Image (cartoon, rainbow, N blue to C red; front, top):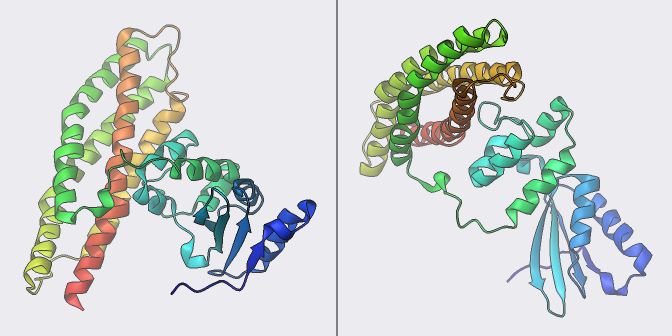
Amino acid sequence: METVESNFIDVTLIEPKLKHPTIFQVFDSLTGGESLTIHNDHDPKPVYYQLLGERGDIFTWQYLLEGPEWWDVRITKKGEEDKETIGEIAVKDLRKAEVFKKYGIDFCCGGKKTLSEVCKEKNIDVTKVETELQQLGTESKASNISYNDWNIDFLADYIVNTHHSYVRKYLPELLTYAQKVSQVHGAQHPELEIINTLVKKISEELTDHCNEEERVLFAYVKQIVHAKNTNQSLNKEKNLAALITELEAEHDFVGRCLDKIRVLSNGYTIPKDACASYKLLYKMIQEFEDDLHIHIHLENNILFPKAIEMEKSLTV
């Protein structure tokens, strides 16, 4: 039987001008994990937006009853353990990555920070970002791929077949166009020479990186899964944590190179004298960056931590 919270507010019995202040007063008195329930004769959604705007994303909002005559909502204050990182938010709903991209928030390499930390660093209004994330969260998730529900050996294969294949297919073209455009337009746009150098660094890093992941890490992930599925002991040949730390550092290096290209190109702004190759180069880099963000997110925020946890469960 469901327990009834001691903090129950029948909003219909409160004088109109005191309704929101009363709810806020009770909410502010809550400690992390505690809840209050509000009972009303119409949808109290305005309270949600006011609470989000004035207190931030520090609560959960759960409808217990949704009309047509009465609405009951449970509002729970989040504890420290409930404060999700950027990466965790994206793991639950990858559509929210579009909001992060809009505000220049790194959800892959920088996925271990909380939203409030990142917004403070970038001087972004956190309530605007939170509101967009919350609004997106109320929409249908029918088109959202649940990567987090996949077996990690299947996810590893998906990364190879989708993202590593993408890297191998388009990096040679990217190298060719970066060099060509730099040679033709470098005198008028000196940033192109630096961009060409950065593309070369990305290519060198990612080529070795993908090979190492497939040969060592992903092969070991399959050993872990096999041992788990067959109840066999795991021959722990690798220092998994150290290997993942190295791979994440390589992710960070490539991410920083792309960040520099974005700054140098002024957000991939096409100059007036740009030829077709110039335009194509910026389009290719932007698409490459978009794919890499998903690629690194799947590894840093899903595959790597799950592999570590599964290995621990077999070696305790």
